[in-house]
Length: 348
Ligand code: IMP
Ligand code: ZN
Picture 1 (spheres, rainbow, N blue to C red):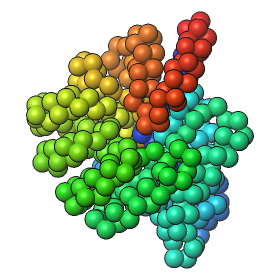
Picture 2: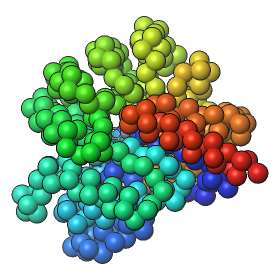
Picture 3: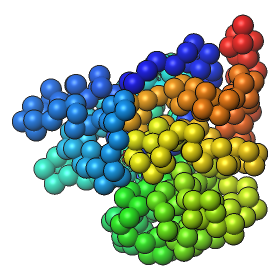
């Protein structure tokens, strides 16, 4: 990790809504994975982007390729998922929505169904161990894989929506934003919505995607990942912004990810400012805490120092994220109570 956040930010109870499982693997877990597969000759520099370093988005996607080679069996997925959940809990995250793209393997016998079951097992294992965090799962569609795979993924997610005891709550659309077009995925996304899956879509992550963003916003999604180029100042448009505002669609904002992935030039120019000033629901998230060497406490601290937020404003920001979760009202109520119980301790 680049830096450790101050106590206030670590003790602040937090909600994490945008975390890709394989992008969230810590150095410690990575060491275990590398020692399991020494023949791959992977070095840490190939799986993480350290302090002051930047990569193009294309290079970031190369990093995921390396990590996917290291995480390709049920045992790997179980270890990675349990470690990631425990780490988020240790960082003060009290509610986590983890997302991941189901993969299969000819050599390992892994199936996409088993992949999802394994993540669910990891969530249940952590619950049974008494780890202080509630976790839900979003099944991810990788936009690179096209129409048919997207439809299969929705069917898989629907199956688990009905059978996972409420642990699978929705669908994520992610993957290299420069590959494929969302219009090919619309039938799958409509189907997902109709069967009750919540939708969190990566949207306008790179410039010049107004047409695609407009199509996706018409669904409408339940949350937006990044939305970096939606507003007019960066080449988006007022009509896109109006659609987001009209439907009150929360944004998941990942500062360090956008800086290190070079879609935003520096922290002070992050679009958090634009949406926060509008009073629009904006949730600070990590995206890929392992790859970008960060954690949620640090991201809150960075937002606070960059944009001059008081501790009270930071508290409100973390508290308001509760209203943006995909789990039902009962969970929101429980979390709000937890925040109330912790407030005195955090501010003392
Ligand atoms: P996984 O789905 O758990 O394997 O996590 C890694 C995957 O998440 C990558 O292969 C991408 O498909 C997706 N991902 C992670 N970060 C980003 C991002 O910033 N933009 C788009 N997709 C991403
Ligand atoms: Zn993402």
